[in-house]
Length: 436
Image (cartoon, rainbow, N blue to C red; front, side, top):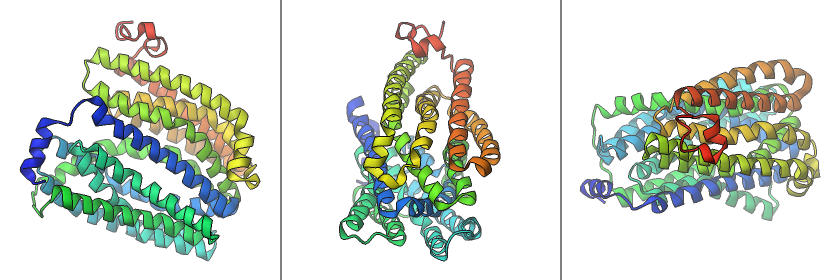
């Protein structure tokens, strides 16, 4: 597909709503489902202490990668989709930016990770450094998918997006079957998944889009400028949901971190539906009149609320059985933490709808305010409770912080988006919510 064909494809579009978004919903479900399965298998393979060491190894390099991403992934999709530049110009600019980002990830990682893992064994510190050295593969692996996303080729976008957890799961299954489980093997499988995904994405881009090396001096600042506007929300969202594990990796024993990581994996499983609904909310709401978009947000909110109430209740009751059955009796320490996290997880799910609704109504920066306030609450709470209560204190703090984030976002949605409580909670008021 040359540049002319790409532009013609963009102009013609790719059909209706189902064709455009069914693969995205499937991809979202697969990504979350595969993430849960890898969480289960890694816990089974490593046990509580090993699972905690694994969490400590990956949390810091991945946080640094998120910090250095600068929102470039969204910027690639936006500028390709708007045809502000050709695919070749965007690919060239993104590759140039990515090289700098990769170097920054390695530099910052080599400074931070040895310090963050100082209380762990030499093997853990070594694996942390190896992970840091391969963070450029993690950084670059998403760029091919973003090119296809900008072209509205959502099938290939989702194929690349699902590849890392699918490949990682394949590696873990191989380790489980061959009884060769070790911390190094698990980390190696995850790093291999990033490298193979990058290779897969590059092959697809080369064969389908056939980009050329085409320099446009204006493309790089435009990518960075656009990306910076979404980076605040990206960072706040990521670190608000990871700061608990970052802090725990510094102050508690690996076994406690392993219990907490399993509790997070299981409790977050209930957000699969709200996250998928959030994607549809953004996609539909972006093309609707504001009143119709508010009605769409309300319908998505109510569906997510019903799902979350049912699933969180069932998970609260069944968590002892599920943890023993799925993760093993060694993880019984995760049960209480999972139950404490559930109210906050319910709020995370509802926020997914409100965040996507804000983007659909042209206010993508609003969620960063709610996430920022929540992150401050989390940091203060962790400082006060983790030294005394360990991972159980972290679970309580996280649940409270997620609840505060939701309440703040609910207020912002009321004041800035015209979303009324009646329009969110009652179907009869959905179409008149703006005037209620």
